[in-house]
Image 1 (cartoon, one colour):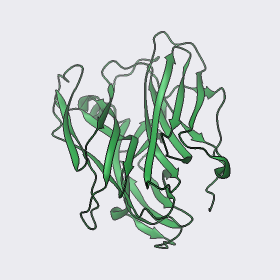
Image 2 (tube, helix red, strand yellow):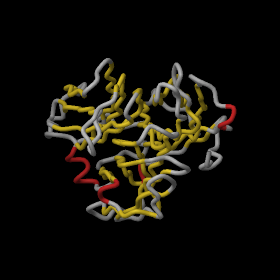
Image 3 (cartoon, helix red, strand yellow):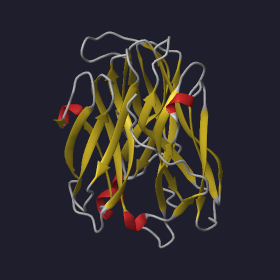
Image 4 (tube, helix red, strand yellow):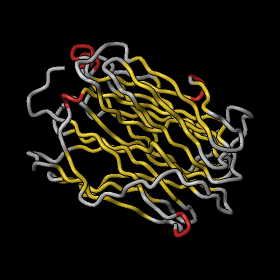
Length: 312
């Protein structure tokens, strides 16, 4: 990819900290992210959910939303919240800020008032002249009651747009819950730039493609695996990770964390973890790996640190 000296992409995450005994309904959490230098222009910011820990309520709901607000040349505010009777104990919000790179496009699709699923066409602000871009997408918001199952996917990607689908049915038994709304963050990068620069790689990992780790059907455990980037970059990349799907049993708190580790120039390890008494049947996440040479710097003005996976 032809990148100017001042072309930068910032990556980070916001880890919500709570004492679960004191968590309230419909709580909102925020942190200020400050850039080390004042930017020439207001950047574009995208967020996604890589970890959620929500309480079991009478309505069996999951209501979690992540967002970026107050975006300025010196920083932005990263948010995580629940709504109405939803109780959010912990969350990790991955964020990416594009400081420069006019060929990259980002957006957020949000659906509402559907039960069985939805497919919608998303149109890019500007068509990609060299053909279909490389597309990353993940969940940035979920509101559902009843069965805890959701799957997000993209298809029919061309130079003008793509189709996004959101399904609220369990792969195991085909039953459905009530998906009130879902938000999908997407990032589109010209395919020609990716192939030329070889400093961006996108992919996914799921419970179907990994091996189990001390897995207890009615307790803690998880899945792990390895991803090959398909080429060797100059430096080990940094990752933006977001959930794409999950299916769980709604008789305990729901706890799911997607993470990566041991990142090298050619691949990385990944994990999908549950803990305490969560019953998780399946899950998956998407990742966007970016060469560190493209990265700028930032700092948290008032960050919240994650205090750990508490067994409740």
